[in-house]
Length: 564
Ligand code: NOJ
Image (tube, rainbow, N blue to C red; front, top):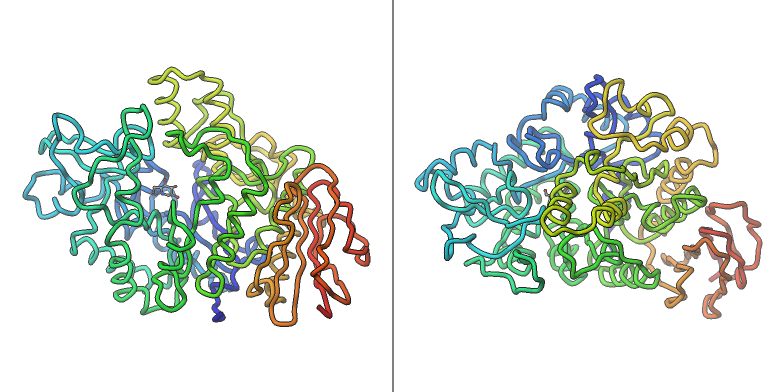
């Protein structure tokens, strides 16, 4: 396996709106990020993925872009951005930007032109179709509820939007669109950007004819994924992007790709023949999702064996060929400690356990802002407090149109809403958690008095310092980055355990995912002469015999086995 800087990195994701507000308008900004660079350096991360900061009307918080070469007014200026980048580079931190090119904003000048007339030169930049039998051109639903088509009076046609109606899909079949995108990518790379995270990049190629989706539910619109996910020209488009842009720079590329399998991932990211460095896969994000439901906002209990199976499939499926990206949360997912750990009594222990799990797998770990202090989900009492378009549209559809019980829908929102991840970073226990001196754009999680950065930095046993240590271990031990992964105790519903092996070096990772006290029995085939404790989230007698360990709630331990 080839050594690469992007394999050895740890990424920190910044969702700028909620990170830190430097000017009191209630919205995080670039100067806010500049002020917190020392904090990131202290944590030890060496790549930042910045969610979109481009000009945007903010229908979907920046994922609807109206100018790819300008900074959103609320976030600052291009000069601020340049200062931020320089500050990162001075600290050995590289910057990857979000590349959102499946769609633009409907306020992008291309779309403004496109909708004017059928013969406008920009018409073919987007996907326009006439009505079919007096209805939408097909039956696909949009990820943000309702039809994926919006009728436009000016030309009496519909345009496709897989996301909000203010996010029209670009027509990648048009070579002029692709040229514009590649030029824009060069423009940022020339400015010194170190790579891209590519938003829903496996949705850019749609099956010609845009056929109706099979009817799998009794709702009005259906899931058309098979006609736009991993579409027929995806590989060709990415090959072209690689030839035209990516191959000319030493950069970090990660594609966001819902519904991919390890086999798809190998095809797209193979070390020799692939187009991107790695993908964000979603299979582990689906262990607690009801696949039959039309909304993600539902509660399904999950099994540890299912999570293990998925992670192992990805670890083994990519081994020696491609590289995993490792994440348990981001701006689209609930907080990991609330979802997979215990955000009550064992919040600290379980946050450290989840961090150990992720950082000890093979791949590049991604930390989502606030995760390093164990931020939790939020439970707003009323839908009025929510800001996320997906949440608001789903609520409207489920409660107002389909008449579902308000409280039940709210319970789903408490568990799964994207706003769980979007409440502002809790910097201290003062007014508005030190995020802003003004009125925040979304309410602060009320638990900020106990959970905040100031507290974490003052406590040597905090989650923050545990992350710092995990990151250091990666830098000091090639086995953490490159070691082969092998699962042990496959069926166990309480413990996740695996080894990592690189030549003569072997690590043993033991994780109790429960609030109970299961016993860990080391399988006989693992032989070794000595043991060294690398990290643990409880006080541990480092010499305790590994053959039989009584684990404490959410206990995590990593050993180096010698003389194996
Ligand atoms: C995925 C992004 O992560 C999400 O936040 C956004 O809403 C959609 N893509 C549409 O851009």
